[in-house]
Length: 243
Image (cartoon, rainbow, N blue to C red; front, side):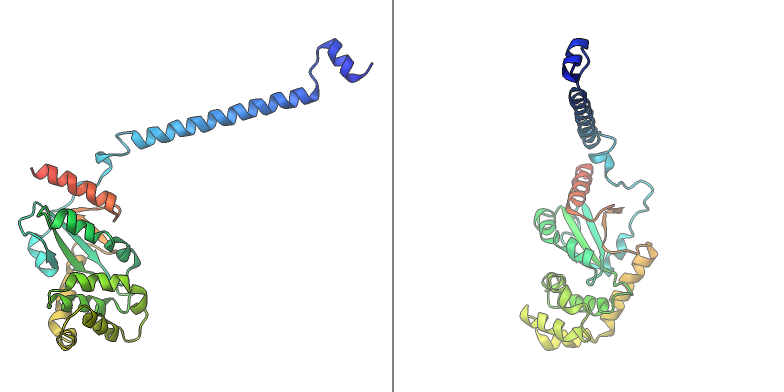
């Protein structure tokens, strides 16, 4: 009797049938595991203990920011704005260049309407050879009411001047292209006053134990991640609390 006829007579399944059954069982198990993973992911994203406002940084255990030392930074916006956003940054820092892409939106949505005051502190890191000259270029542009345009240009052209042996020539070109008076700008670049302003800003960072850039604070609350989503969420929360 052939094997097929024997299985028909005895009722035993063929090896192929057993194989297909095992494949269906394995496939069903994999589908169930994938479904559980999706459900778990949705729970994680929607769980109030892991997302939403409770996941944002708070002022708990944070000392008040010494607001009188805001004078050491570049200040933009209403001095009486209910919320202050402070940033410690290095013009040669790539992550700072990434965060700077958020500045226009911050200005438009919060600073210009008077909801937020923005203070920018120079924190040139010692491993960046051209960070101090870049900070000086921005400060000297501020003397001609062009801090923001120079700030933007420095970050946009960061790759051009970061490794330059003489970045000051490039900075002078940027100043001229932005409509600044070139000779006044170049004189400013050599002033002890500008060096002192940057040194005092760096000393403030040291006193606050700020060691990395960009470090962004909403009032006295350091963001865990310097990105627009967290910045906007904390600003909105603090604005609501101030009402």
